[in-house]
Length: 91
Image (tube, rainbow, N blue to C red):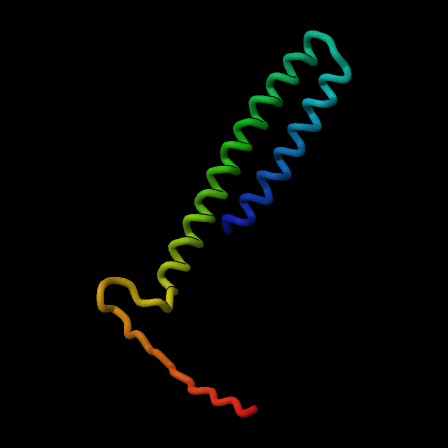
């Protein structure tokens, strides 16, 4: 599965658990407090997984960009080109 799709699914899941938390807080009561704590725990787990997926996406993009670099690296890996232009102005 694509990492971007996984991130989108995790964002939807975070929104769902946040809604469950808010509903449980509005209702109150001991059972609703347990529901709130359960939802909060799963929302935090989803947020941690989402951050991990985002880190993996960023690392993959960094590695791909580094491999696709056009710039030479290292001592003597490139050639310095200098272009000179002589501009004459007449008044």
